[in-house]
Image (tube, rainbow, N blue to C red):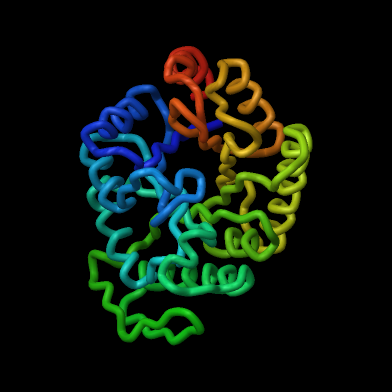
Amino acid sequence: MRVGITILPEARWADMAPKWQAAERYGFDHAWTYDHLVWGGLPDSPWFGTTPTLTAAAMVTLTIRLGTFVTSPNFRHPVAFARDVLALDDISGGRFICGIGRGGDLDSGLLGEEPSVSERTERFTEFTRLLDQVLTEDHVTYDGKFFSSHDSRNVPGCVQQPRVPFIVAANAPKGMRLAAELGQGWVTYGKPAGTEEDWWSGLREAGERMTEVLEAAGRDNATFERHLNADGARGSVYESVDRFEDAVGRAEEAGFTDLITHWPRPDKPYAATVDVLETVAAQVLPKLS
């Protein structure tokens, strides 16, 4: 089981840099930040850009993988975003992970659009496929329903073979099929449930469906990463060491390969203490390596 940590881009870099450095020092396998214009969980919070945040994180770390959790087509074009992906992968020395999803409700309307959920799902699929094409080919011309590309250049030295890993966020069948088609992995936060037990039960069922989708697509389940947002049930896994260990055990039983947690905050969401995180890093993470 690999464990990652998400650091929200809600404070100035002078305050955030030590957290990214600590994430590497503590032994986390990957570190993430949200990619939103406004996040519904903290709509009144300061919020800083994802690409410059990850660039800065790459400059103050050496080994930890760095990712978007998750980028979306709500305010990005795949041709333009491909340049950010190339730069992040280069600056980080090949450590960048591109988490991709349909995106949040608030972001989807901030630029004056009102797409339906179905349209957002369709746009997400088109975005992911075109981003894959622009990163792996040169002279890309494409005219789709939502995006176009007219002879987009990707000169030798920038064509990615293999491409930056895509970790595709999905709970529904269409997204799972897209993860099997283009993803090196899948990430989920589960579906709303009445109890935490129901949430874990739903995750086990989702994992079984993902296995079926992978088999249908001819993908090797053994090399496919399965990421779980560990704080999706209630609160933070850093409420206690026992709670963290319980989440690891349940996630393993459900077939997940990676657990994504959140840096503790003084208030909701993800309210917990850094003391627990530090204890987990010292006593539990070494056992998972």
